[in-house]
Image 1 (cartoon, one colour):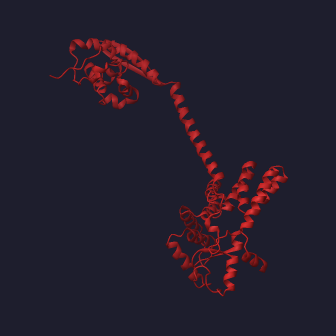
Image 2 (cartoon, helix red, strand yellow):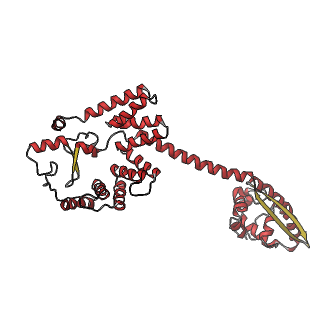
Image 3 (cartoon, helix red, strand yellow):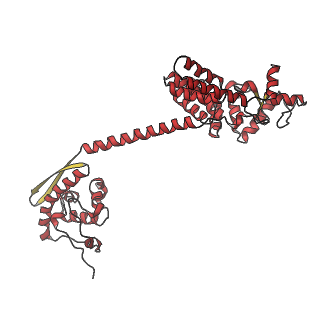
Length: 394
């Protein structure tokens, strides 16, 4: 024989809200309450679960009620229909339960005023709800959390900017002697389209003195001045997913070189693809285009974003530009930090910028001395006998 679930006193059940949910019917109200009590979402639980059902689930409480004993909660559930003689007691419980519901609702962040009106033996419950100051404080706390999250992201980016990108990428080294190339690289090196390798002027001179005037010193491919053949070589590397080749092709589309018509949107498309593959030069080019509005609508924040990504990859010019932006904004200490990094990588413009700041009293003597020593060390590492000979030839 199935055991009936012990039923707590009616006055502790708090049926005021459920009478409204049951359309004024005590039987439906009590059934709705029992269904919620057993953890089965009723219509009330679905429509008002943010105000009622959560309280029913939490700790075994019902609205305006006290917790049942552990033995009662473990007893098997048996559907119970109120008898006609019990309806009057349920109606009386509605009034007391409504007031108890108001007290618990106030604790939950809402305040409910329940007015129980008995007309002809029928209980009508009118609920007027409004948000209290606690709800407003919750919204304020959410906004504060969002702002705090944004601040944490900004601090994280600032930390990564100043702690990464202190060394130049491998692509800035000569593919033959493996020494970093002097800056600016376009004045001290050359990239051959056959293999997309950058060679310093010293290694090119050494190869020419060995009689390799018509072949690439790295891959031994015959050199050609025909643009159509050069473009085909570049396209071959692009098809293989070479990020440097994709960025190089974007440069040619932007400037209209290698027999290509100038096409800024196509250049941006190629630079974006190369940037996704990890090209620091592509990030730098995108930063220049958007920050200065070259062929596109000016978007300085977007340009700064691309320069930041390039700087964290060790791109020297991007790092210098970030320092110039901070200097223009009056953030002298941050500007010195950016220029200090690029100066220690051998960028003379950054060293001169710190020197001028030192003369104007915006940088300390120790900062300028540190930048000067770091610059000299970087330049010394980029020297070689072959490069010195090439420089002497003019």
